[in-house]
Amino acid sequence: MRRIRRTVSILLTMILMTMVLAGCGDTGNQAGSSTNPPKQDSAQADSGQAGSDDQDEQAQDTPAAPQQMQKITIGVIDGSLAGSIVWCAQQEGIFEKYGIEVEAQTFTNGMVMLEAIDNIDVALTGIGGILAGTINYDTQIISVIAPDSGTQYLFVRPDGAIAAAGQGHNTLNPEIYGDAESWKGAQVLSTSGNVLQYLLMNVLDGFGLTLDDVQVTWMDMPTCNASFLAGEGDAATVTGSVSYAEDKADYVVAATGPMCDLGLTTCMLADPAKIEAKETHDAMVTFLKACFESVEWMRDNADAAQAHMIDWCEYCGQECTPQLAKLYLAADPNYTLEEVYTMMHETSSEGDYSVVEERLLKILDFYVQCENYVESDKDKFLDNKFTTSIIDEVYESK
Image (cartoon, rainbow, N blue to C red; front, side, top):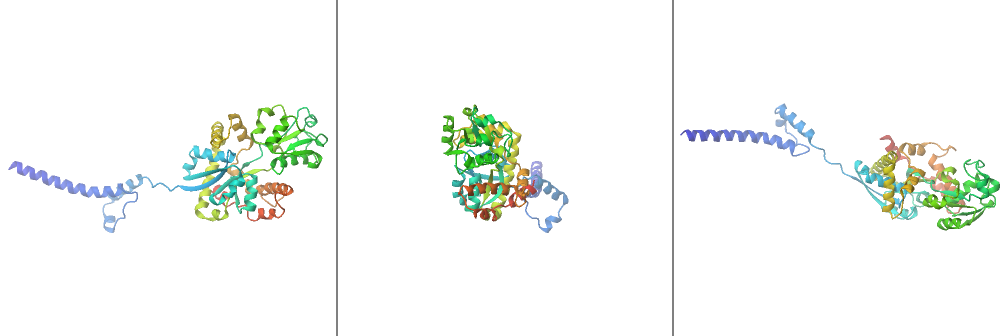
């Protein structure tokens, strides 16, 4: 009989415990199984404050749902400095930090990139792509990236009249070698219709001269370089890694792009419709935020940035030594957010345009002289081809 009573007692105790646990179990499951607990009815809301406090505490400990990744497709030129910003941001987890997935398509040049502009949200390109994009492809400039004249060099022979004339005679920059007399009649090897011709014309203008005052042989850049090394010409224009080659050590750097303040730059272009559309607009803002953080990271981590530059070039099938990587990054340092914002808003010296617009217009003038463009193309360029809507939003949110 005692055993039966004891058994009944144990059973009653177990039933009571089961009822209590069942009541507690409902409350616990509501707080722990869902990020947003089920909405309480009026009866539940009136029940004990302690239970409500427990739910609030447990809800606060529950991690928030992951934010959906933004997506953007960009175009970059193989081995370009602009591309190195994107590469660093990808490798260092900066894009991931900002919650954006970036698909980067690589191209050999800006013109080829623009042919695929319908499939690209943002194009990162140099002067050729900038002018073609704004004049012929109805794209707008949304940001500036970096200067683009650091590797353009004009070499002269060390035993020639130009080097012998020394420096201090050019009104553009006193560091430029030669004087008007030594440059008159000089035999120059250069490439026509591009930035190397623009460099040569600026140098001559600083001496009060024009192309008519020198004897120019126009050829492609590799041929120009090979011919100069073979002993032809008094001066030659080159660009890229050729400017830093060991075979140039015995020649005199008469002028460079930065000495002449050519104003060449790389920019980001986008279709106006995509700039206006909320999804792509927001993605562009996020992309620029991440890119500017990448620029700051590269400035603070020079050695690692150089290593990334080498990897980026190798990915594009181009050779880049540590020395070249260092020279490239130093020649055309990427602009910071503050620098870009100022350039896109600060009034130019002539007072009519922004600094960026004025620089690009001067280069467009040169291409008009070369008959690559016509005078009316200036109006096309200025007709709503420049917007600050994206950079303003990035700057205001910093």
